[in-house]
Image 1: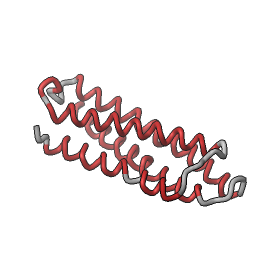
Image 2: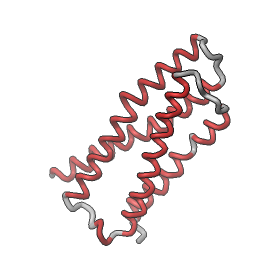
Image 3: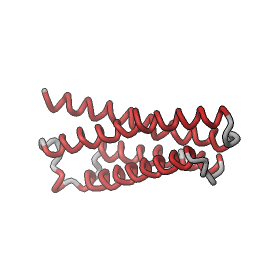
Image 4: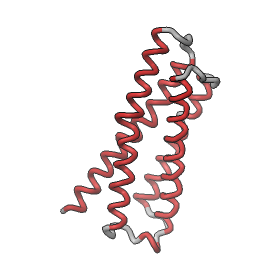
Length: 143
């Protein structure tokens, strides 16, 4: 029964993490087109900081904590599961992307953004692509 609750909280935290990873770059798209120092720009700074600090980062930490708990409780035979190793690499890539979002949030906070709205539109596709492969690996377990 405990394992089922851990799995449920793992999925819940992943959903929250993905929501943040998908929404933050969308905010960047709009922020990149706003004038530095404007009220709109300052509002985006607050929204971005709060989203990263209070939702996205805690959700990432919870995703890792619940996921590693499942591994250590034996829910996955990780030593002989190629799908798990591939998934782990993709989750590490997703975590690195999260780190990039944190850097970009800081750039906006300091009015140092040099990237276009188009750049952030393209960057916004990265977590979706990673998520698709992660879910396929976790559900289908192809190897």
